Image 1 (tube, rainbow, N blue to C red):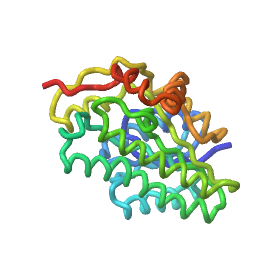
Image 2 (image 1 turned 90 degrees about the vertical axis):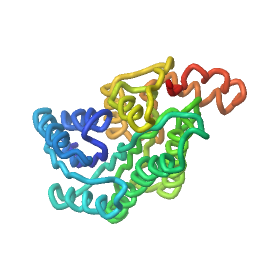
Image 3 (image 1 turned 180 degrees about the vertical axis):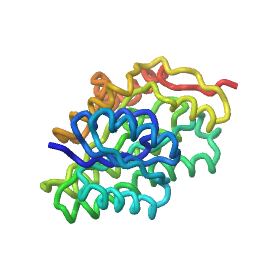
Image 4 (image 1 turned 90 degrees about the horizontal axis):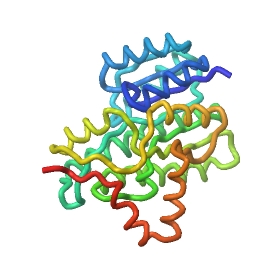
Length: 261
């Protein structure tokens, strides 16, 4: 079945890869980001993949802009089936090295950006009595690792919101899925280094490609599930942390990315 999928942060990385992945199924894809030139490139890729694209320049931190993004999607395609909240960035460092301004910006983009997109879509989903919210969090939203405390906090916040919303919509045809990728090869590290203001050591933990994540999301759109772990073994870390959090503190030492000064 052809779906209407809206994706925030779609100009690169997981958002771009997922837009192209669902386009192969014939989806109509509304994409938003702040970089209009990048969005136009992704829109062309969506069309080449067999989908229909609607690029909209918008900032997720602006609730009114998210409402306008959803309104534009409805005007163009007539409905909305999936809202994928993907926009976000990272800052690395020990908790006492991350400034209050950095922390507020992280929350503004990663958490409130998700909240704004979810809230805009929910009004449509409740009216339709159906819909699917997909929130791209992270494995560090399930278990924190060294020097990722600020970023991890925003990812935990996303998951907390999703779990509550999933309970609130239980028994309806409104689904909520959380995606928990491990390190993924995107421009994330480059942006993070720019935002952090220093080089950052590479994680020694497992990694995956954007296409692996996009394929996992694509399958979940077809068959909704509460949680998506594109790197299947990462579920083990979540279980280990629930059973032995102190022991897991030792295990995750190699997963952190320490700022290089």
